[in-house]
Length: 327
Ligand SMILES: [Zn+2]
Ligand SMILES: [Zn+2]
Image (cartoon, rainbow, N blue to C red; front, side, top):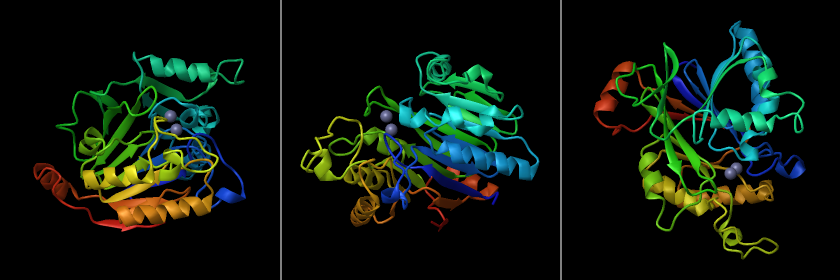
């Protein structure tokens, strides 16, 4: 529906893919989330979940007789967030347009890393041999990405844009080795925050809570149970300092930011479906509107009308959302 902000999970697993019977409920693909804002499609990370998403985008494009056009945002460039890209079908379609953003010291850094990931010794098809039109650019935390009737572009602020514009803001977190970008996607008064690969702080990450304030959907790293994190789970070392959160940390952040809904994300690859189900139940005791993200799950948020959206902006995000939930 064109008046909904839709979040769809294609890959929810952290670190490496986990196919097999023990993970069929939540899924084994690594990080990839699709966000549809009206007619526009944005993608968060390119773990192996982007492979089935790519096929689906190509199918939808054929059905609509329109070329694929997407904006793809990398949180960071660890394997589990990039490894699906060489198999992303739209990248091989000459008609497709891919706007690709992520962290990097210079505007060219992101492109160089993606090129290295597909160097001749490690992959048979180079980035340059992929047929799609691609704009690949590292962005700074202070930059804002705007997608409106004029296309996808960088701006110094998201102010003064049309009501139909999708606005993406960046928060740079240092709570993961090498740093990570957290993104906030805003459209018609509704917002989704994607905070994967981030470790909580004692008393909560206040900067992140501020950035995520009042989001309709917060997708947050929740890789570990408490025992595992503290090294009290048999057979597992402590993971403190690895750059990933416990379920409790995710819930504390959700409560501090007063978001409507929390999606636990980046599930530990050693955890089976029963364990993730338990963690989801534990999360609901701490933050009632919690759900463990699973492949194929959609969260739909009803967008505000133009007038409501303008009112909401001036009321400084004080309206609560009307939302619809589905699995
Ligand atoms: Zn990761
Ligand atoms: Zn990582």
